[in-house]
Image (cartoon, rainbow, N blue to C red; front, side, top):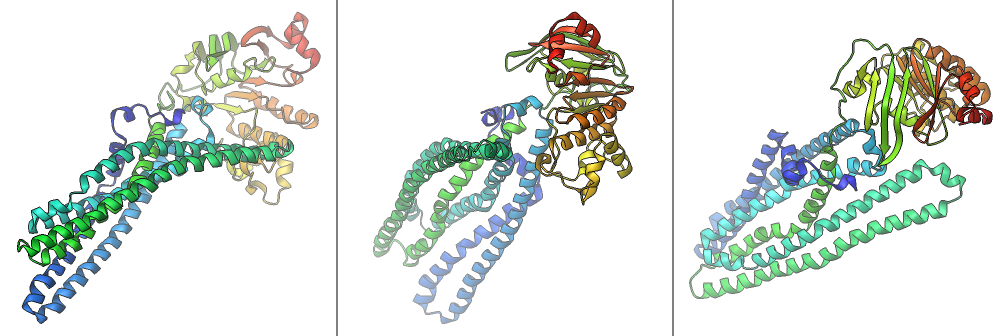
Length: 582
């Protein structure tokens, strides 16, 4: 899948380096965590030191006066270590929340800068999984690294240094199992990463299926395919479990083996230490101190299992997140020419375009003078909506030239272009927020009076007034609270509020009954006054008064002219007019 393929920086720099770079955006918190980890880890030496003092000094010399101070020293060290651990956990948790928030916002900002074509090839549920699940998972690598992995490494090195100070020979015996443990751990980590990736991809597929099913719940119920939908979900969920169990089964074998090897080292160390003590090579306290220190030495090894899981899953998640961040931005989103005025002249010169190598438009030529209404008609799949997508630069033409007031469209800022364009799509979309906020997308500072004015013009004011909440009524997910005609009228009202010089209407009256369509047409006639308008209409009666009608068939313009001219021509338009539909 496209989301799982890293590009750009991923190819040249390791994922871990990416994560560290993000962490260093908070240098103070990162340094503080490191200092606290060093202090907390250094205190582990107190317990074996206290034990050795009891065995080698207090007991042989019968120093009763040292018992209480030595015990208090040990207790104080334990309390100090736990206090530092608490403080370190607090700051690490804050750092994790900051990092997660920062990356999540960065990913969302990146998604808004990606071209529409990118979203056509990536499922919404899978993208949501990246933002909601993968971001916190990847940040756990950093926090666990600071909170556990770094502390474990420091603890390991400090305890080894303590052991070497007292007996380098017994230290080597104690560390004898480590090479075998290292080989097993390295082997399993390499094998586990692709398994975790498969598990994550299965989870993303499950989320995508769930998103689709919830979005299409009415269709599922209408066609009574609930059992089939449940069966698909059951299979997808079972696949997630199966992929996860592959990793769990491996860990169930590997990590007990690692623990067995590590714990066998205790017996080896005690046996050799006892032998050397009986030979007089070591004091009695040294093997005892080593026994106490062994717990601190191999405690980091006991953390390998959860840390390896966290690290492997985090790296897999990070690659998927950075695959989004490394995708090139939509070109000319903010850069490009911003003309001081836009009269509204539009021209297509030999424009061709293909979706995934399937030709959609072929050498299309058309022209709209400022203030003209141009209608696009033709059979389904003729390329009508593609013309509007190219005008709004949701897609880029493969060849040819599109001119706005004589300016090549690919040199204009997309932000400027869309600020000067109103677009009512074939599928009206309302956000799950209030009617007021849905309309204020077109004009953020619009007053209630302005909103009511455009609602009146779009024949939507009557049903909005009937709502108990009025403009504060929440539209529901995808505008589900309203009928198709009501959503379409609200979308038209939003375009009226924007008052753009270029208007694109993609079957804007397709969801309206005959009476409502008649009322809306009056509003659209007013809206089209003194502005350039491109109209796609399912009902040809709505475009008969257009200044020029272009008839498309199989991606090419086959006829053009006024309604009367095309009917008289007796071609495709005349046949469509005879059937009163496109």
